[in-house]
Length: 213
Length: 185
Image 1 (tube, rainbow over the protein chains, first blue to last red):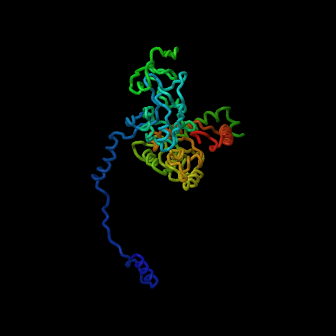
Image 2: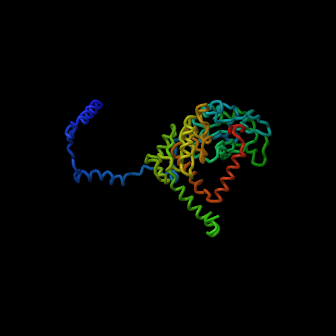
Image 3: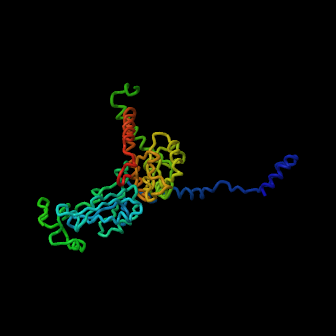
């Protein structure tokens, strides 16, 4: 339609018939300035905002807690006596959709007992530049060795620093725990460990006298 | 050399350096480079009142690269987007910084395939890597604060040139990625 009108106008222009009166327009009634009361009503919105609660999170000063089950950095848990729960089965690495986990299992020997049973995780690396924090590794873990913390401040300036080794991921030693390697609790098998029969490190396994078993 | 000789020793390369670093880090304007879902978190930081990016002197996301100092690569970079990303980076005025936001930008993340650049540091030099899929706005703020520390420590003049030479030499002597073993490969 517009094309048709324009061409018609051009034809008129060429023939000298077009003038200002031939352009169609509709008259609009201008409302004029708003009344003072209406303006005050508008400014009241601005003014009252000053007394509203500030919604901004003051992040570096006030760190709001995350959701309790937030998927943050991983943690390799320990048994109550300090032995590692990881048995180096690589199920987490197989479950990982991003191939972010690298595990190498090792054999437990009487001199180097890192976890109850026969095997331990010798090398455990998580590449946090690949990890998508989906938690499939946590679901896959048969010994509940791998869980996630709420820690999220992971940014760093080098690629290498974001590949976390086993030492970075291991849970800290709590009360009653003894740093591995040390022998299993005397008279207990790995089944007892998984049944929760071991509550703390054996008193004979003190800091100095290890391996009394 | 110039100005350094005329001033008392140490003033230009310590006091002025610190002052310049403080000023630089207090007004870093980010360029918009949202590519995927990370961009949603970046927008949550940039434009919403809840995570106010202006608190870090970053007032607004600059839509023009010439007015930007910081490029937040948010999302997976496809091979087709790579030259565009590099061009935007080249158009930014120095000094400029790059935050690689999220797993995909940092390393390709779960998209280990032919279509996605396996880490944006193949294309541009990255200053801060930020893990997460996607990182929450607090994580991005944490990355920005860490970047501010880096910017504040930037050297000037001959010190800077020496560091650039050192970094260049280290990069030339570095082991190629193809020869790396384990997770670094």
